[in-house]
Image (cartoon, rainbow, N blue to C red; front, side):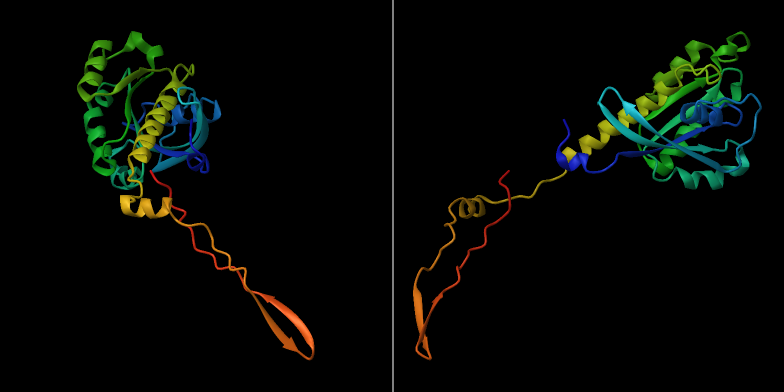
Length: 237
């Protein structure tokens, strides 16, 4: 159960989707955000951006996911790496039928970590509908995931198979990390002496004396104002 303070703002998470060109990054994001798939390949120039509200069942909470699709071609690396900054999660993608994209995963992970540090990541194998033409075995992919310490997803963007699971997992990992950081933040430290003074503070004092002022044979009673002692609003933790 979230506190009132935690519920007062909308949760947002920036996710970068990285990998070589032609592994299906753009199609993956569009399938997740818009539910559409296009057969023709169109190279991403620089970066693309979409967002979607995702309900995380494990935490019973909704989060806005801002998904950044980065170009995989070498000539765009200097540009796209600037967009990694501020990302709180990442998907490292390769294609079942592209051996080079699989071999490049370690490099992509290093590039993300250089800009973002240790953030939640997943390893994603796309185009599992083309297993008859596979150039990467399942065992190889699972071994790589184990080596890198990442959860491994085998998906088919074309058939919308397990696409949403990837992003829901990343959202859940981000929220869990965010909540751990929130609960580990230092709380105000109140010494025993201050706590004692707060606990024993006297209630507001009221002076009930009445002065009498005579003016033109009329008597005016003036009641003095209450003198209030300020009470501390600090809570004792």
